[in-house]
Structures are given as C-alpha cells and as structure tokens.
Length: 220
Image (cartoon, rainbow, N blue to C red; front, side, top):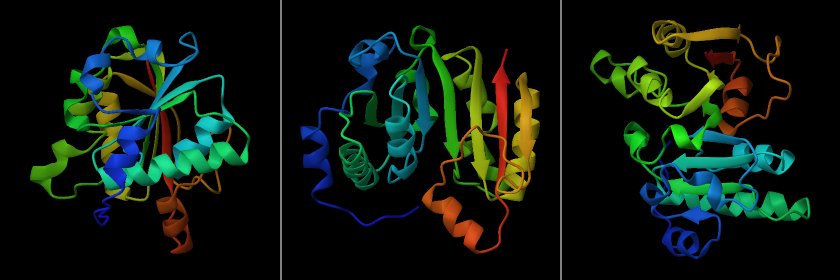
C-alpha cells in the first residue's frame, strides 16, 4: 500500500516508548525488552496502519507482540492506532513493540533465542510477476528464514485475497516442511481462527465480493 509522507511520523516514533529504532541491537534478546519477558512472543510481518495488531495485542495481554513495517508513515499511523485502542480499553501498551525493518533481511534482527511462537502475515504484496515472486513474504526463501527464529511447534497465520498467491503459498509451505493444519478459500464462510480480526484490506476486498483465503501452517 502506498501512503503519503507524514512529517510527524518519524518524530513521534522516536519519542514513543514502544517503538524500536535499532532492532539489530535486540537480536536474540527481544523478550527482555518487554515488561514481562516470560510471555510468549508473536510477530506480525507488514503491520501497515496497525488496525490488526492494535486490536490483537490489546485483546491478549498475556502475549508479547512485535510488529514490523518498512515505512515510517505506516508505523506512525500504527503507533497512533495502538495508543487509541489501548486507551479505549484503559490499558498500557506494555506488550507490543513496533519497529522499522526490511523483512527480506529479517535474520539480522531475530534468531533462535527469540523463540517466536506465531507469525501473522496479512494481505502481503502478491508480487504476481514471475521475476518478483521471491519477494513474497510466503515464498520458500522467506519461509526458510522464519524457521531460524520460529519455535518448534510454532505457527504461521496467513490471509490473502489473491488466488495465485494463496495456491503458490500452499506449495511453498509444503516445500519447506511446514504442515498445513487448516486452510480455507472463504474465511468468512468457513472460519479457521478462534477469532478473526479483520484488517482494512480484508474489509475492502470482502465488500468487493472477493473471498478471503487463509491458512494455518505449523513448523514441526
């Protein structure tokens, strides 16, 4: 998603207690950055404006969350959304951290010591052209990287509107040794999650009559 430059985003992020500006320094030690380091650690790749992660994290204070995006403007909006949602629930955002980083280079900021138990990938860029497919967040090349910090028995929750990306991803997961434990080609008619938090994209695509595809893959 393209978004206009927001001059306020960078200053607000730098002043935020739950924004990490130098994630490389926390490789292998993310849990220690949270108020309660003993909680399970979950990760969202490509958090966008933060509607999903703000609702998810504030509804599960017994889990710590990291949300990653590459664009300051997006993260600025995510930061504001987190603050708004937590304030509405009279909560402090002590179980969530936002950071800016290129997901293709994710092994520079996470490793086995971080023991991520779940990854969320929601409506990532489908990169339809053949020469660009390796950029997909669910491509086998990326999945191999996630295995380097995903805990044994950990899961990946994936949602998309794109048929080709979904069908290709089913192949990518199997190629890299993940077990697909649940899948659906119409999430809203066939729920596979305990609770489905709709993203901005999800609402838009659903209103257009496009079925939402989803899966849960397990790393054994």
